[in-house]
Length: 177
Image 1 (tube, one colour):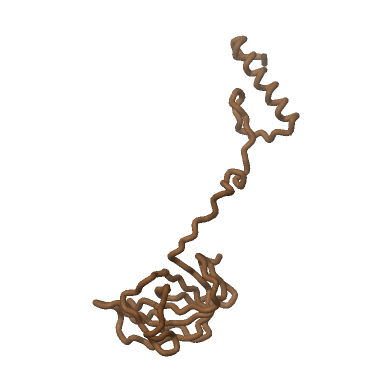
Image 2: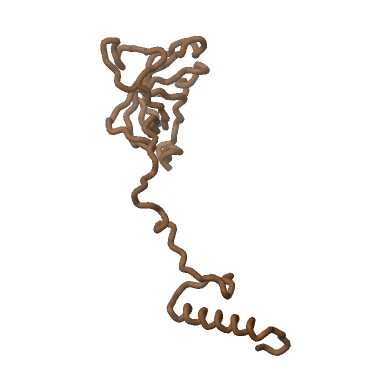
C-alpha cells in the first residue's frame, strides 16, 4: 500500500485484483478506455456497423420521389393560382439522377400545384432543377395539354410537385448530397 494511505486490507486486495486484471487485458491487446473504473467490467465495444442489423435496409418512401433533372418542356401558365379549385401547370423533365425513392424511366411529367402563381416562372427549358414529387393514383383536377398528355390517355400515377429548385451545374439536389 502506498505511504500515507489508510485502506482496509479488503479494499487493497480488491484494487490489486483489478490492477492484475487490467494488466492481463492490456497484454491481450484489448483496447482500454482511459476513464474505465477498476472493478467495472471492461468490454470491447462493437463498431457501429456491427450494431446495424443486416436485414434492415433504409426505409424507402414509395409515395415520394426527389430527382435532379433538366427541364424539357413547360406547359402553359394557368393564369391564376389555386383557390377553390386546385390549379396545376405541367412540366416535363429529363431525369438525370434519382435522389430519393425509385424511378426508372428517363423522362417524367410533373403536375405542379400552383399556389401563388409564380412556381414555374423562374425556370426555363434547359435549366437543371431539383424536384420533389408526391406519387398519387388520382389528382384533384386533371390537366390535359397537347404535347404532354391527352384526355384519352389512362394515367396510372400522377407526379404532383411544388416549386422546383434551380441548381448550379456543379451542385446537386439537397436530397442527393
